[in-house]
Amino acid sequence: MENILISGVCGRIGSAACELLVQNKYANIVGLDIAPTLPTNIIQLKSKITFYHGSLTDYELLLKILKDENISIIVHLAAVPDDAEPSILLPPNVTGVALVLKAVAAINTKNQIKRLIIASSGKLYCGYNSVTTPLKIDAPYSPRCLYGATKAFAEAAAESFALSSKLPTILLRFAWCPRTLADVEAMKQITEKGLGKDEFLSPRDAASCIYRACSVELPSDFVYAPLFVQSNPPPGRNGRFDISNTTKLLNGWQPKDTFPAGIEEICKDRIMNVQLKKRESNGYNIGVKSDDGLYLRLLNTKETTNGRNILQHSVKQRVSAEEWQLRIELAACYRVFAALKWT
Ligand SMILES: NC(=O)c1ccc[n+]([C@@H]2O[C@H](COP(=O)([O-])OP(=O)(O)OC[C@H]3O[C@@H](n4cnc5c(N)ncnc54)[C@H](O)[C@@H]3O)[C@@H](O)[C@H]2O)c1
Image (cartoon, rainbow, N blue to C red):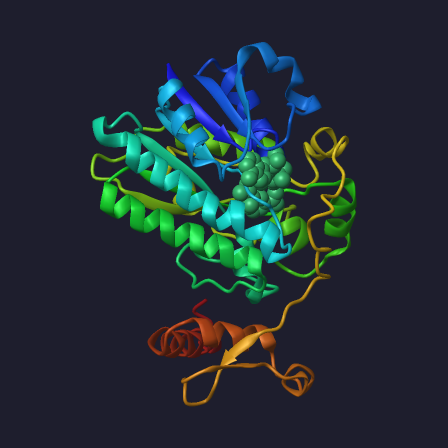
């Protein structure tokens, strides 16, 4: 049996993953959280898991847990999960990630730890706003808050660590798993394509993806992969993120839920974390390249109201010049085929 450390085990995603791994008797679960006690949804598992109350930023504690519990897989979820003041956000989300990697390097001289799974976030892609086709896994980041920037740090730190240490590392970019019933209500109000319910992630789908990331046999030369994790979009809609790589790498993993499945039980006892900034209403500034391509400027209101299609404009900004040209040629071909009634 594996010994899995879940940091942030008291959180929505951590507790759901813990429950699934314990129920399936896949692993001995060791949990670490700054919250003093397990949440109500997994309190019944108290006797089946080893719980450490402490902070991610306590390096000695991290070392002790990895050694004493003979940890073989780390699922690193602990973080401040949304935007907040730098003094609150940076210690867990930046220093914490760096300390986890440092502790792994320190104890892994005999390859005790076999795999790392690290949480990232779809919030890295806020700047795309509404999207008609799912965002690809290699789409450039477009963060719009410090929280998104901390996840960009986590991704870069994890990738460089994986490449230098050769420790297989999977980075899970979770979509939006609501934290309170107020969040759920906010999701219901959003109707733009690729937002709100289209970016929903249920705790159960997050957990099944983590389970698969822990247990799947990876290619022998595997080192690192970022993967999107999202539930199914409502019927007739596209999801915000393209999860095809997740399905391929994780041996056919598929989400099962659609908004709002599984929300009530995870949100019912949770209240808004007062340390977090109030979630922004839908819509972020769009940065577009200047005509000479040297810098980003803000898309101005006139451009958005003068009949120019913002979405088309932003697609042009985020694909290469060659791809944009190809898209135009393809569209022209399609029109010719349609005129000839070949379609
Ligand atoms: N829920 C979402 O919509 C969402 C989306 C994308 C990414 N994520 C990421 O997924 C991970 C889990 O998120 P969640 O939704 O379960 O959030 P959550 O807030 O419910 O859980 C995070 C847990 O980490 C713990 N924690 C915070 N600081 C800590 C510290 N210094 N030491 C130890 N524990 C600490 C908290 O007490 C909490 O139990 C986070 O990394 C988050 O950034 C979440």
